Length: 218
Image 1 (cartoon, rainbow, N blue to C red):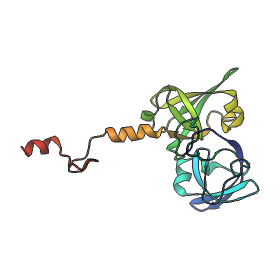
Image 2 (cartoon, helix red, strand yellow):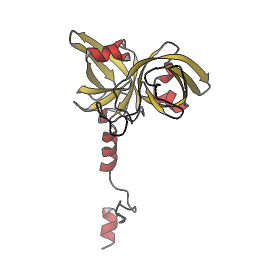
Image 3 (tube, one colour):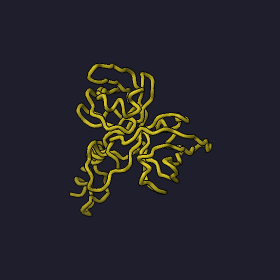
Image 4 (tube, rainbow, N blue to C red):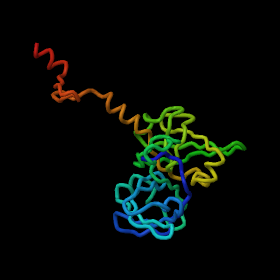
């Protein structure tokens, strides 16, 4: 579990094409300081498993599903990346609950730079708009941000100078893709609010019946 608070702006050292998969080598001295084989590190919001570390560089494998759903497939040597280690149990939750499971790729459609910061507009892929609400949380390239405006197919966020200086969003421009993860709580609420399937057991072990089945059983 992550928080969306980027710890380090790292760099891609090398990308090894493995057919439908890929192996990445990434430089991140801070996040690798206590990392070892099997640990997790979020790369642009994608939870990856560390294969090995050496001199501030770690290696991670990326499967076909991850390459398809996220923007990691577009990375190349020299690309900057947002890096974050998992939250320690009992640590401060400075952002929001982030799984590192990207829901889809959005596209920056507008960027408005101001003296106080920058506002960007991101187009949403189909199906994600219902999970985005004004003043709610969303993860953009691994960064926990607050939604300013939520439309049917887009949202806007405001970026303070610190975020611009310490993350990849400082150089992102209209047309650039970004990884998106919506608030997982919204997805669970939607699932739980759905109608209970008929002929199944509820969590307390009682069998559920549809209205028609209940009437027929009278």
